[in-house]
Image (cartoon, rainbow, N blue to C red; front, side, top):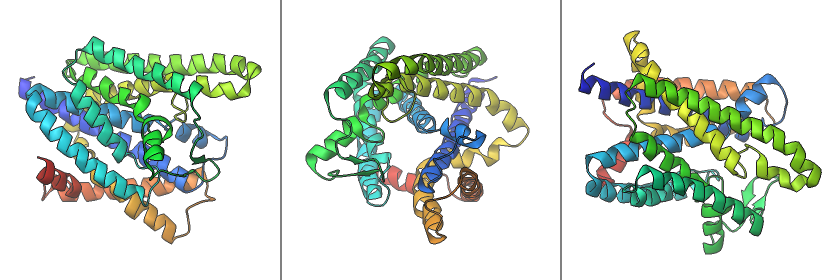
Amino acid sequence: MSEMAQKNSRLLGLDLARYLAFIGMVIVNFKIAMGAEEGNGLLSHLTGALEGRAAASFVVLAGIGLGLAGQKGLDQTIGVTIKRALFLLVLGLLNMTIFDADILHYYAVYFLFGVLLLPLGNRALIAWIIGLNLAFVVMILSLDYDAGWDWSDYTYRGFWTPVGFLRNLFFNGWHPVIPWLGFLLFGIVLSRWPLVARGRQIALMLGGLAALFLAEALSGALVPIFAAEDPELVDLVTTQPVPPMPLYTLAGLGAASFLVGACLLLAGPLQRIGVLQYLVPAGRQTLTLYIAHILIGMGVLEAFGLLGGQSVGAALLAAGVFCAAATLYAVLWARRFKRGPIEAVMRRLAG
């Protein structure tokens, strides 16, 4: 395989991974918005496994993209990334006025820190990942994680105040910079791997599964022990995304590694049988589709009175319909335009 063909296969595999992570994110958000979080059935467990994993995979993929861009020219990458981060910050804060679980304004800060740390070597970046997780443990043991939250309806009081905003952004928001920045840094580390090598793709899959299994096994063994000492300590050893403890980070990194490795491995075969061309366009405009799943997807759910009190099956059906429509739209859009609407605006404004 030529160098150009290898590069194309790698990029298509990453686009496929973004597409699948987007589907997972829609399922999670529709499930929460439709009030379908209760239940112990198979569908509930399967969709529960996506919570925090899909979003973490997105951030890892963003880190891979940042790392690949940095390899083309660090100075230009820093300037463009800072401008795009400011664009995402504004867009995210606007989105926060209608969707409390926005991730875009967190992304903006991940990118700002990530591009500043981009010149570091892999060992230093891994040290940062470990340090971020240790720092979060110290913070949760010394600060009030519940500050600002009303967990009965997932509202956050004081978000628009300086103290509340910074506390939410760095500590107890949905995707706090500490430790979530670690996912972006891990993506930068992966970008320096020879991702086109089949052996590395398989290693990513197997290593990811091993990390995911280890995190869940450790959590399963430690939860009863901590519960016997003090039920409030159980949160320290879960793999749930709220609060994002070290075992959650390990599980998220494992899930992301498996997804990236599998998509890189499958991109070639799927392209040869003519399937990939229908999936990649949506993976290339996930920013547009992220906003669309809030404005259009949840807007339709609200219009039909489906926000709250629904089943997991109904949430999956709604997510499936939206993702199918989004996939079809992206294919048709890509026939005339190179980028999605919001991606084109961001490129025009930020380079």
